[in-house]
Length: 93
Image (cartoon, rainbow, N blue to C red; front, side, top):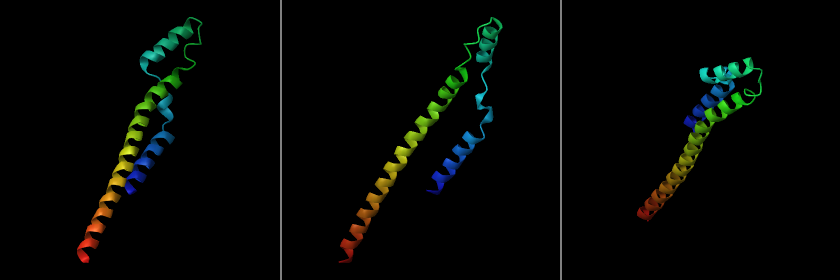
């Protein structure tokens, strides 16, 4: 549980302190600047949102897989402890 809290705190810090995450890559910025120079400013409207979407999705997938792994390992640990306690009870009688 302590490890989970540490990882959760680190992720929360990265999200909270990620003010520079709205920056664009060089190619995207070049594309937006050239389109703005031509008078079309509708190209860059959703560009940052799209970049953030592509950036966040792999991390959400890894977090989901990690959560399910943690839940299943916790359940397996509880089952092992139950079996161990039953075996100890059987040998005591």
